[in-house]
Structures are given as structure tokens and as C-alpha cells.
Length: 490
Image (cartoon, rainbow, N blue to C red; front, side, top):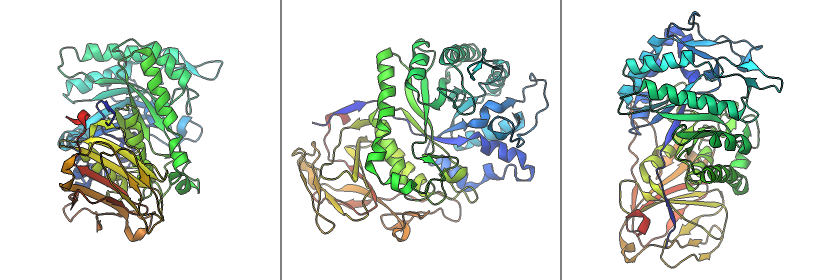
């Protein structure tokens, strides 16, 4: 019998605030990005897509609500300032334009608030004092008055633990989160849809996160968010080696596991999200984090985080840097966009246990199928040499291994006598077999938008149920098996 965890596993992508500001700084280009057909269609394809507006500069941002007493000017590079920029401002007319796009695309928005207003330097190097929430509260009220729907408000960015550029003690952060909760409760009083409260949007530090959770009561913090850049700096020339190393990929499991342990021990209703993940920090690495090879890391992260009850996973970024899902110039989807879209459409909210014995080069994840019968299996082949033929049966775990010319069999319990029925398979491979290609093939055909900017249909191939799932070298396979009987999927 398959073991499962029944929980909601929302799909979330990230969109950095720098994109918003960059559009603001280049006046002649304003509006072009938001009116781009590919961008609009890419967001609409997820129906809906959650977009996070946040990043390092959110804690240097004020909002043009008339209460700050300062002119609303854009960010300006300043190497002596924190994060390398002066304070910037989000004008309300730009907020209007963004929300028009959100409404048109059907996106759900998570907005990252400036958590550094009012802070003072402390002897230990941290920033102390209570959060000055005046400007943020005014911006939230303005947003509500305009009728803009916000899915969640997140406090701060990378200020937990030792911080990035700045840090705040967990005790003070908890008090600030509680204040944000009060602001939202009062501002949205009588509103049928109240946004989520998210924090801290930083790197996982067990002691710091434990204190934050312990000092926020039930209902005061809906989501605890953490960031992941476990591959190191984007300038690293060994990124591909890390991505293809199963032992390296396994290393991140401890973060997911430890955070779940903290939440379970506290008995809290707070849930975990990955609030931002680009794999390699400092904008990633061209032809690695924006190429086919990165889907191995990305999909493995989605599968692994789901196993540890993570409810959402926010990709850095939708557009921006070398880890964007869309090309920063043309908005043409990079390979990871299609990987994300297949995950979103095929993998349901209930996670099943799945194992593959014989080689650690095959990564295996299984969920109840989304909006359909049976299960969806995700198979990731990190080997460039071996072809694997995988049988899914009800006979328990048995494995037979061989080299490229042979077969490797893995049995997953649950398949009944209806195995003769067909299944749907989606095979992802790089164009020309080049792992660093920015074009991906689905069942042998290049995926690309058409002349109207429409996202291509992701058509499966129909396979007879008695045949094994063939996973070629350096390939990814989603297999929807409607005849698979798993009690948890009823």
C-alpha cells in the first residue's frame, strides 16, 4: 500500500520587485513589458499563478501614499548604501498599472513589505527597535480602498538569522509580525477574503525560526517562508556537476525536515513555504540556471519540498536575472517554465511515497493526479549513459539493473489488473541533446510560443499500460497513470 500525506501543495512562482523598479526607471519602456502578449499568456496559463513581489530592495522601498513626507523618486545606484542602492519609491500610478495586469492575467499577489523602517543599529550589529509600520499600513489601506485583491502580505526579506545586509532578532521580528496581523485584521474588517500574513522571507536558521514560531500565537502568522540558494554563487563553474549529483541534491532535505519538525513541535497552524529559490545566488548562471539542465534541480526541489509538507514553492524569478522562467528580453519561456507548467497541471495535492532501487541517478516522485483519476509519476534521470525501463506494478519493490543496452525495473505498489489501459507520458529532453540548451523538447517536439504569443499545448503521448516507462539519458518524464489504484487518491 502506498503511504501518503494529504495536504494542499500550492504552486507558486516569484517575480522580483526589481523588475517593477526597472520598468519605473526607464520611462520610455514603461507599459511595454506588462502589455507583452507572451508575458500575459505565460501568467494566464497557470490559472491562477501566484506572483510574489519582493526581494532585497523591498526593505529600501517606500510607498507614495502621501504620508512619508519625501518625494517619490526611483532607486539610484549607490555603492556605499545597503544593497547598493538608495531608497526608492513605488508611485501609486505604477501600482495601478500593475494591478490592472494582475486582474487581466488572473494572478494572485504576495507583496513583500519594507520591514526596516524605524530600525536603529544595535551594539551586536543587528538592527533593533520596533518596526515603523506607518507607511506600510497606509499602503495596505490604499490597496484595500482601491479594491485590489492581495493574497498575502509578507514582512521583510532575508533579515532572519545572520541576515543578508541586515538582520533583526527573532523576538523583535515576532512582535512586528503581530503588529502586521493587527493592521490586516483592522483594515480588512468585514472583508470576506483576508490576506495571509507571511514572514520572514529569509534563510533558514533553526534557533531563529524556532523563536519566531514560539512567540507568534495561532493565527498570527499564517505562513513561515524561507529561501533556498543551495547551489552557491552563480559564478561557480561546477554548478552542473552539483545539479547532476544526487548526494548534493539530497542535502537540502534536512532544511525541509527541520522546519517541519519545528512547526510540529510547536503545534502551530503556521505552514511552510519556500518564499524564494533561484538555486544559485547573484542572478544564477547563463546557460545553466536558464537552460534545460536546471529542470533537474528545479523539479527535484518541487518533489522534495512536497514530501516535507511544503505548501508553496516560489521560484526566483518569473522575469529577471539568469534564473528567470522567461527570457528577460523576448519573454520566450525557458525550459523550466514548461517543467513548472507540467508540474502545475499534472501533480495533485496529495503526495505518495515512491522509491526506485538500483541507482540513485533516478529521482522518483509520485502524487495523486490533479483533477483526474490515478496518479502522476515524475521520473528524473540524472545519468547521461543509462536508459531505464520502469515497470509500475503491485508486486512490491524489486529491481533489476543493467547498463544502457539493458533495462532497469522498479515496482511501485498499487497498480491493479487494469494495467492494460493506456497512460499519458510527457518526455522532456534538451534540443540536440545539449544540457545547456535553452530550448526543450516535449515528446520530441520543440516547445515555443506561436506568432500570437500563445503558450503551446502540452500534448502527451498515449502509451499502452503494459509497457514500461522508458526514461532516456538526461531526460525527465511525467507519467499519468489513471489505472493506478491508491487508496489515498479516492
